[in-house]
Amino acid sequence: MTVHPSLQNYADAWTHSIDAIVELVQPLVEGEWNWRTPCPAWSVRDVVSHVIGMESEMLGDPRPIHSLPRDLYHVQNEYARYMEMQVDVRRHHTAPEMTAELEYTIIRRNRQLRNETRSPDTMVRAPLGKEQTLETALRGRAFDVWVHEQDLRTTLNRPGNLDSPGAHITRDLLLEALPKVIAKDAGAPPNSAVVIDVNGPLEFLRTVRVDADGRGTIDGSPSLGPLVTLALDWETYYRLACGRVRYNAVADRVKIDGDPEMAAAILREFAITR
Image (cartoon, rainbow, N blue to C red; front, side):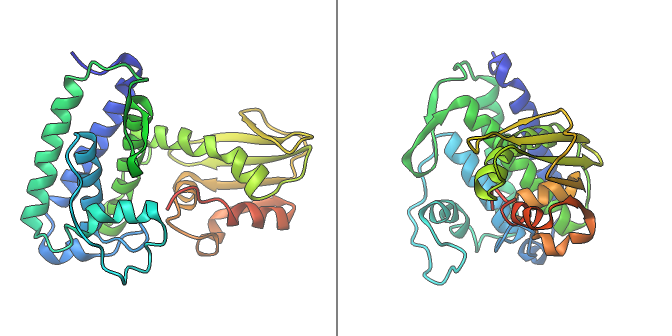
C-alpha cells in the first residue's frame, strides 16, 4: 500500500527534496556544517537538525527534553521556541552523527509513507500540541524541505531544483497567502487590483482583487488597471515570501509599476514565513 492518491504528489515532492538534501550534505567537512544559511540565525547544521526533528515528529517520536539557552535572540515567541528545541539539541553533533541520523530518519519516513493507508483528513500531530489533517501535514513537509533545500543550495553555491515538484507546491502555498498579504496586511484599498508577474523557472501571473468590503481574492486573469504591478523572477519571489531576503537587498530584481507607496507596503509585508 502507499499514500492516498491525493497525497501522492506531496510524498513525491518530499522525497525529491529530501534526497537532494542528503546529496548536498553528505560530502561536507566539519567546518562547512557551521556555515550560515539564508534561514535567519540557522547554520547548515541547524537546518538539517530542523528537518530531522520535524520528520521525527511525523514518525511520532517523543520530543527531546532540553532547556534552551537564554541568549538565543531570534527565539521571540512560543512557536520559535518549539522549533528551536530540535535544532539546539543537535548543535554539538558531529558531521558523521548528523548524516547518520538524517539517513536513518529518512529510511523510517520512507517506510512510513510506503505503508500509509490513512485518509487525507485524518488528524495528526502538529506543533505546539495542536492537530492538523494528514494532507496539511504532508503538504507542509513538502514545502518545508524544498525551502530548506534551497537554503542549503544557496549557502553551498549549488543552485538547482527551482522548478522541481516541491517548487510547484511552494508556489501554490505562497500564492494562497497573497490575498491576505495585499488586502489586509498591506492595506490595499477597496475596489483595487494588484498584479504579480513572475518569470524564470516557474512562470505565472496572478491578480489579487480587493472587493468593496476589503476582502482579497486571487485569480489568473490580468487586470486592465491595476493599482500596482510587481514583476520579478521566481527565485526572488520565493526568497522574499519566505523571509530569506528583504526587498532593499533585491530591489534591482523587482520592477514596480503603479502606486509606489502601495508597492512598498506590499513588499514590506511580503514574507509569510521565516
